[in-house]
Amino acid sequence: MWRPADEPLPKDGEAQAAEHAARVARERQESAESGYPEYEVRIDLPSHKQALELVERLRGEGLPGSTVAVEGTWREAYADRPHSPFSFLGGLAE
Image (cartoon, rainbow, N blue to C red):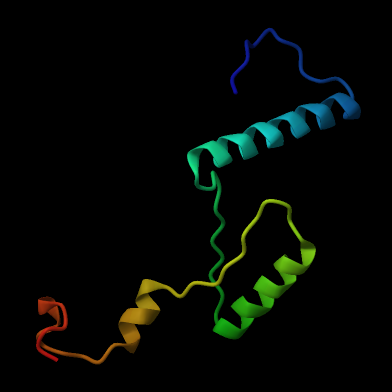
């Protein structure tokens, strides 16, 4: 949320914490109203095992209002498919 440049910034830690809490509450309300999260984070890891370990660690931290999931990449799924010269047909000629 933009404010006029001449509006003073919070001067102490308590005022900054209150401003931060208000922003977090506003963003959560906006996410609830829109039906999808406002922010997502993507972390590329070298193995599925490491991804699962990170998921468990993040779930253990219990970030309020968050959902943690492991998803494969398109590149990985594409590499696992059997090669077919007719793949442009959507797999009809396999």
